[in-house]
Length: 333
Image 1 (cartoon, rainbow, N blue to C red):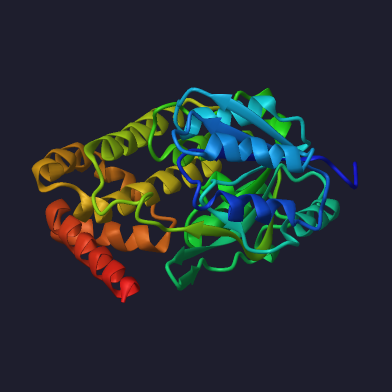
Image 2 (cartoon, rainbow, N blue to C red; image 1 turned 135 degrees about the vertical axis):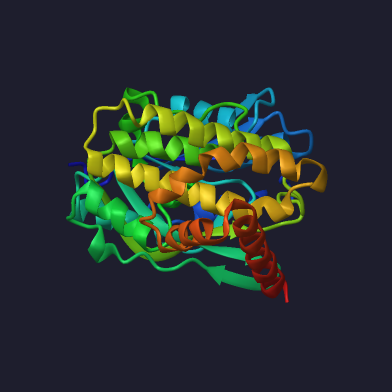
């Protein structure tokens, strides 16, 4: 394989002029230089379009695409279609990479496991001056294992890493299989990730938290609207139906159903962020889907499933919401 492959970095840009420089500098300062950096100005109404053009004049590796606002999914899709690299990396423009050796480390892993379709890495959430690193991925349980073994390990030990920003992905895996983000869908990573994993053949991982996810007031509100919950219901319903017809092994299907169960359990907990006026409506939509908790590969889902069978749906929701609400308060202090 090419020991010095071109890596495409896809950066959707919208209303982030305060954070854009830190994001782009974290890319430009990478020790690995063979990068194609695609800035997608998604019709940003601030100075971001001008800043993107200024960056492109400073470094020939930067290419800018100006487009009408279409949302995050549409911007990422535009970047995928415009990219030429052997692999792609996604980064949101209010976030940054925490190490200048990130891409170099991923390339070293790729040289060690050259047939990897996906290489995972971890993240750290930054909220003000507080840092919350995600659990380190134990790459020894993924590298050299079958895809099913690797995904099952991830699911048993936390989740299945839905974020596109915590993976380096073989580009033609996306383009050859039409794996794009559904425009207008919230929690679009969850929908996209299952499609990605179904088509991937081999995976590997780097046990470092390279992605700096910035939790800021402008990006996360204190409430979650009904569209967000409706989109989650859509994702679970869609894949619950599609997985029953896709020609993959029953073991692999169980893992993806386990991922849906993880999403479902987490959504029950997040109901505390829903407006009171719509909470009962959302619960009525979620309640008929509770059987998905039977795919309890993940330990947290197993506990949720046990609660559901002992105390019922409504009390399970209340307990999960109480737990997550108080955990969130503890993190803020």
